[in-house]
Length: 177
Image 1 (cartoon, rainbow, N blue to C red):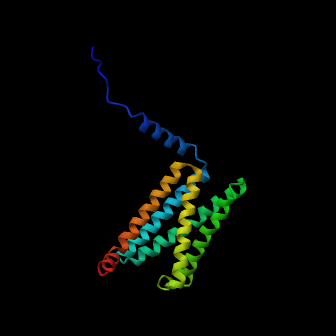
Image 2 (cartoon, rainbow, N blue to C red):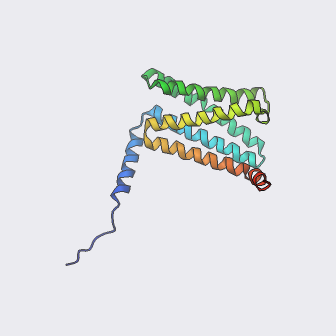
Image 3 (cartoon, rainbow, N blue to C red):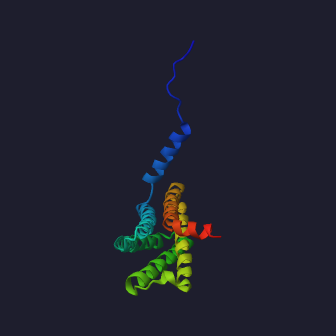
């Protein structure tokens, strides 16, 4: 009369996990390299924000140097994308990534100027940074949804670290108004 049944199965969750794993195992090596590099880029910037909050300039420089070293895997991916004929918008979008890396190298490591205190330099730099973030997310979504969400999550972690690093200043600024 009563049938003993096991725990309820979540077909949706099981299928989603299977699709996610299949997506990752079917990724082209260069697409995987791009996604990993984009996530590491965001985590390095997160590290810069958190180390800056703690006034650990030695760590800020290390995180920055590691972030700049990501230019090499990005260049490899870029050359591959050119060779296989990826969408033109993707190859053009990489120019913004390389421009950002060049500006970062030039201002922070070669000229060693504190451009973040100069609005005429800092505002275009911030705009370029967010264009690069958009490129990372858009290219990741062009690979597959799982990659796009992974890069997006790493970007939200970066934003959380940015808010955390400026929280006392933001709190003070808004409470005085």
